[in-house]
Length: 387
Image (tube, rainbow, N blue to C red; front, top):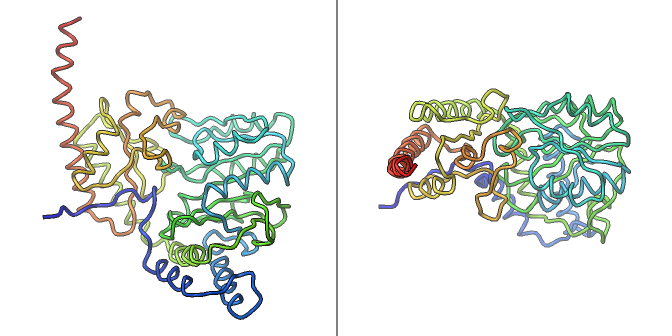
């Protein structure tokens, strides 16, 4: 009998919504290029522009502010490239918990780079950020809205106010936040914001950079005049259509409360099974669907594999490390010791998850922890005898 699997890794990628899959299929049936002026081309263009309106509505932006890209990583690289080439910034400030796509893009630029620290809860230190902003030279700040590993929600509006006072620009990574909390580009007053379709139940390989319409732009990818000359290349019509459909659905946040209840049930269960468990970022505002936790003496890679054999799909943090379990820079920035951090696993809930899924995870994780502890005990006894 095949074991029923429970998918608990929605922050890595969300299952494609049926409506998004249908939108992709419809777009694939069209022949026209969205840049062509004949009827077929105009039909394709209508799909692109409808998706642009839907994505803009999701984050309360203007359609003209939406630039479609091949995903969140390209959007981050485009944003940082524009910071230097179009905005003329002289230095970068990146929070210590940013996603690797932002960190790598910032490191690649030939600009001074400062890291804004976070506290033990994973929240950016606003006083430290203010001191960094006070240094000479126009700055560009990258501060995500919600962390992909811990789910911690950052005080972006407060950080933007500090940046405005210093004449700095701000990029916000809203890839994990969109569809899980209200994201209001206008209210946040940030200059740029990045999104990714596959975190919302859309197809992989498509994303967007939201660029404030008062700012100049400079394309990273050059060629034709697509995306209002801000990103060359024939538009990914099926991907963009699927993105738009997923964005329309993600704007409805009525299911968020039920995800919070499931997360609380999970954390209560693992806390009862292992009183020494640490739930990272638990004292800070968090996304309703995300929990990152660890107990001492565990190994995340072993845990993930064992849970997978039990039919439970979870992760050891970010899913962007070529399938390898690497040391979390997020937990390191929070001051978590390696011995605890290397046992951290992330559970990210989503549409379709149930109390049964959560209870199975608690039971499986608890059983694995007990087995690993019993195997470790003889080795600890031998170590004491040897000493």
